[in-house]
Image 1: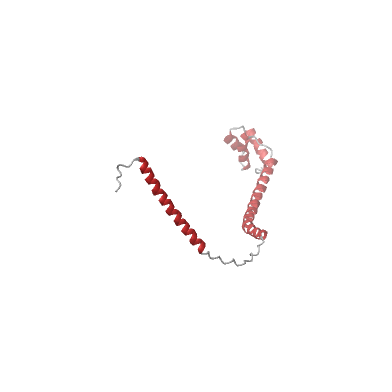
Image 2: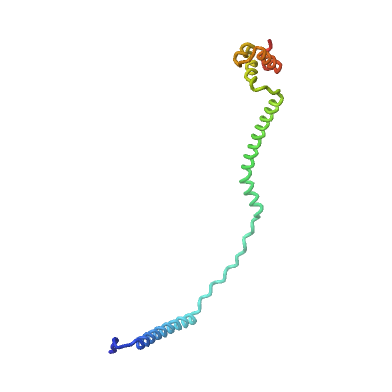
Length: 153
């Protein structure tokens, strides 16, 4: 038998090369046998596809319109309702603004006196509660009566 301990690196490389070439030859032989089998056995042909008639194309525009109508109709109705409510509120606010604009301005210090005069208090009671003279209170009562706010004497 061959003694491996006496072998140098050249002999080891030669032995590895021989083993590698033997393995390569064996692999090539197996591949050629597989190719020969494939050529010998013809692959079965797939059956031809059956002619399929294309389905009729739906009217996409009509379908889109139907979908939009189905989804948007309730939303549009809700929006219209909300717009009507907002318009009613705006009408009420504009009527209030017109009423306020028609009244002549009242000085802020006399607004409480004017509301007391509208309730029908006497000039003395208004003067006492609002810290003003009786002449001013009488003037406020006259102003309230001319606006139709207070009771007539």
